[in-house]
Image (tube, rainbow, N blue to C red; front, side, top):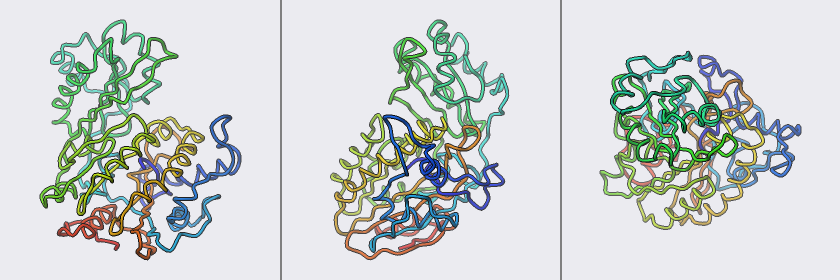
Length: 398
């Protein structure tokens, strides 16, 4: 559940995030009426299914406070606790790689929050090598606001919109028809090569459609060009052991398509739940399904939309019984997150938080697993469950 943090981590002060709490602040806003939106949702945050898997108790263990509306006790089958990130960043690749057993010990390069944000040498090389008439943006920005600002000029001039954020990322937005989707991917491939020497984590293609500011919208054809993990992840280890991996959503992009097996994509989180169920039906004994639900982060966390985030959580919770019903005896299901993105927090950046770890093995007794010292415990738990050799980071909580 991309960006679903449950309270500030021990080192949150170093990231400017002391006091951040994605779940806690959303639940508090809903309890006070600040999470209401006509036609969308009203009242206290309601997530009965994940609460039965220990969500409320995991949040209480993380922060010392039980979020309002999540006070039901976990079921006897629930495995619940929280994870602490040890990677040096709070970005998407770092969080995912660490939960897959590989913490990131090196520091990414970040573009400064200035105008221009990019080094002139990088901009000039991109314009020259991608044969562009120029670029627009060249600053820190959030996705839709910068498209609203420069979209019409982009259509008129053919200049792509280039921007970054507090993450180690170079993002390029362009119109799918006026600029061309394949051309956007080609430009991003050039940018990826140029960003490699700078140690930039991701280059992201951000296609959009629409003819006016009011009708502009991003499409599902996003593509992330990431550097590969520095060590073999649980995905690589499973592939080496002859197991099948099913990657749902943007997992393939996050791991640079290394060990990611069969890729299943969809335009939104509810459709991604459908693809997850398809993958679970195809998976056999010893196989692994890894799904990312990105809407929490991109549609609601970064834009600081509390009501939207709350509604998305409740909608996902309503699908949890379908996921659990698909599980067979001997399966293990884990719900977790890669970082926080508190929609009540200042700015538009991710927040350094603990993440929930909730699981279930049908027919088996659950337990509280406490606060885990690294997300890598998730990867090592998967390794232990699937019967492959342990890796160098993390320990199983089974």
